[in-house]
Amino acid sequence: MNADLPHSLTPHAAWEMLNSNPQAILVDIRSSMEFLFVGHPQGAIHVAWIDEPDWTINPNFVTEIRQLILGGVSSAEGVSSTPIILICRSGKRSLDAGQALLRDGLRMVYHIDEGFEGERDEQHHRSSVGGWRFHGLPWEQC
Image (cartoon, rainbow, N blue to C red; front, side, top):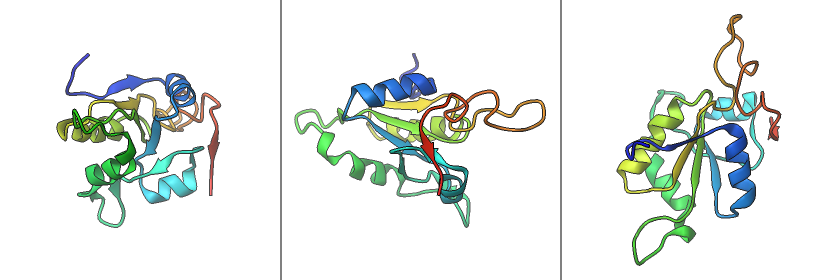
């Protein structure tokens, strides 16, 4: 595995990690509109990587993630023992966001390779060939 890339997890592997490790957190990094109106995994914390209205990378992303895990940092090593699992629409933004966290020194960074909605099918529809929702994992919508 490449140390510059977050660990890749399937949606089911991520669900298992969340259920077996009470320290693990699931962070939905999609835009606010996607999180609210498309839906999101139950229990996910929202921290946008790229958001409206300017669609630029959130300059506070790493800081916001670090604030979430304050209780999981070892003062001896300065490295978080909290597994951070990132999810986006199809696994592309979470890979980029995970790389930013790794560059900042976090090590237990994962990303869900299929995302929440997965890739598009031949009719250009999502949630039909992969993703958190496709696999029937718990999700909610506002």
